[in-house]
Image 1 (cartoon, rainbow, N blue to C red):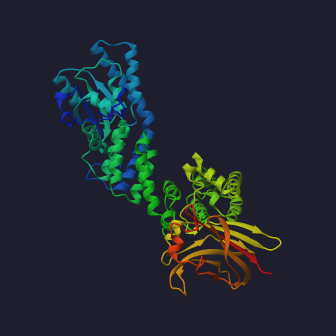
Image 2 (image 1 turned 45 degrees about the vertical axis):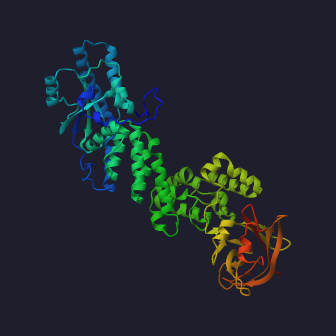
Image 3 (image 1 turned 30 degrees about the vertical axis):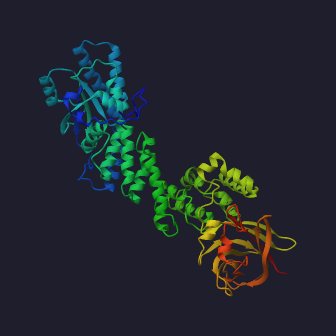
Length: 550
């Protein structure tokens, strides 16, 4: 039997009691289900009559809002009527003490919102039939119909804290006891599927909206095992952007949010993969709600130019969805800033963060200082900081799959304007360049001009074999000419020191590049070999020095 709830039960064995469902021979109670009309404009969630996932989401939201509005008044009415019903029961059973009244009220107070219930006095079959026909109303509305189900209280109590409390409230009970609950017509099919599941540990329904209805019913009646089962079924169905966004909203819609976490994690992974190339789907991503944009920006595999672009994109999204400054600051500080990896942002962009009005000034200073201190740390300290439990969990120091590889830059103003650029490439990144690929670095600046490095796999013009090349380019900004001296170097084993490989000088104009087609003077296979002297712990360490010519 399911051990999700049963006190003291450690076994995880799932027993099949489907043969006992609604069978009087294996039941000790009768569950009386009063079905009342749905709220206005609320379509039923039964199979074959659902209007689709959008209708399901709208109806579910409407139901939650209506239940919330009416909850206070309903609880008062239900409490008073429950006491009356229980007093009648006590009079018949000779139990009219005050303690029983208190227990009856306590039982009602613990029932989930939107569920009305009462216990009917025991009696013979004729009495039960008469009670079914006349069915005392618990509020002013009349039920559309009443269904009766033979139930086994041990089976239901083992699966559900709701039914456990209902059946163990301390009142005298008998096999003839009728338990009444009231539900909306749109919940009928889901409740029947749920009751069946509590016996059989399986569902016959497989459509998305029907399974969602069962999941919501399982949450209402506290059947965690069914919620997990529904989550598995939904994960195995074809996911769309609409369904993924709906799944992300479930934790705020259910009481037992832990039961749907695997489903929400799957939804996040789907959206992150769907919008992996964020620039390709820019308009779609900008239209995502908050939960959607969080899923996309939390991905390590996000294909974007740089973390600077992630910052700009998050800011653009926030300005569209939260035009009021106070609301925008709140969502940026509490939800989005933790997804922006500020230590990976360039220093030039960090300066702009300090003056950005969308961020609280105190928070902006904290984020920028933290990023700058990290950049100033030695590599081994950076690895230690990134490996810290809290930092590793949110990946705030981890580089993404940037289209432009991050670089470290040292700038000097005297005696001559000069900058030293460090670019590290993973061996698998280099391998992916074969046979004619290239990878670009993020931009860096010297003398007010933007430059970049690009690593290539190309053909050696003289020997006609593939080789590794490195080039220096200047970003196009008009017809400005710029004369620089440059030098390329790489770390080489066994000393693991930087060794100069190529140097020269060049007068740049916008869009031009200069470099060496075969930086190491060897073929591609030798460069990528297991015993290659150029990869240290799987990394190729490159350095470029640029100096403005006098």
